[in-house]
Amino acid sequence: MKKVIYLVFFSFILLTACGKKQAVIDRPAFSADSAYHYIETQMSFGPRVPNGQGHTDCVIYLVHQLRRFGADVTLQKGTMTDYSGRVQPVMNIIGRFNRSESASPVLLCAHYDTRPWCDQEEDYANRFMNVPGANDGASGVGVLLEVARQINMKEDLATPVDIVFFDCEDMGTPDFYTGEQRENTWCLGSQLFADEYLNREVRYQYGILLDMVGAPDARFPREYYSSQYAENYQERIWRTARDLGYGRYFEDRLSYPIVDDHYYLNLAGVPCVDIIHYDMQRSTGFPEWWHTRRDDMGNIDKSSLQAVGEVVMALL
Ligand SMILES: [Zn+2]
Image 1 (tube, rainbow, N blue to C red):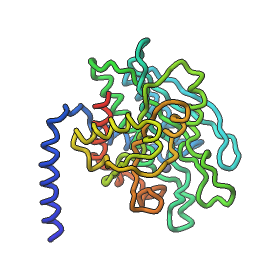
Image 2: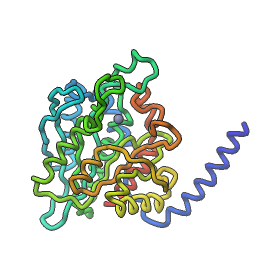
Image 3: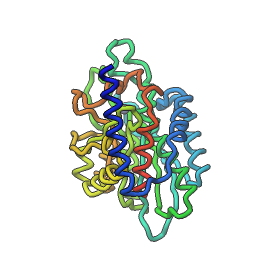
Image 4: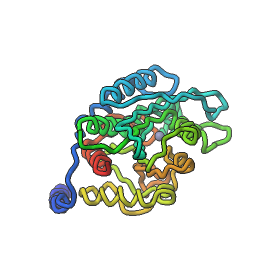
């Protein structure tokens, strides 16, 4: 009972604080209901594990959705080597909006594949199951599909934007593998994208990567590599979040280096900022549901989606 009273009191202070901050900048249009629906749809395909049917169904869905929202869509196909030395087909999905001769596009990205192994499960037998990937995968993609829908509806928004959905981010060496653990077995799609970036004509202004952005208690401290390679953009994003009253999600403190898709983009010369759920209190740095069977729709909260979506829209 005591706790409840405290919570109500605390929420009141929070609401008051947010209310005051709302006046700082205009709240951009973004529908968390719609983002949530895009996450549910991805989940309806089952796990989007590379080489599986759910993955194929998801590719068809994402291409269809991006086209429906007016994007010029291309598939970037290639092969990479997985942790066990096998050849792995990789397919990134690129949707271009508001192409321009004079202005460089902003890159918005997320991975759409889901992890083949729940290797953070306590029970050994469960570690060979697929991660459902509501948050780790579907959340970033769901937010960006809603951003795509908003871009299509806003006639006064002329910023060129490329929305890229990366493949094979989460195929990194499983914890239970007895061979060598190599960092570059993660993020295969973005590595392919970064390799080919230098041969493409496009030059990005900067990039934003969304990864695990939908949890009820989402926390995004400033990721270390982003602050090394793209400090000004990171500062701008966190300031925008603060101005929108979302400082409780976008924590104003530095976290540790995370090798995520943005890392390879930064190496290729695209200043890219990772917005990623990170828990400074835990030894792995990631929340307790991370790479387990609990990463399902119960792990998705519309308020977190709304916060991230508004921040991205405000930057465009
Ligand atoms: Zn993951």
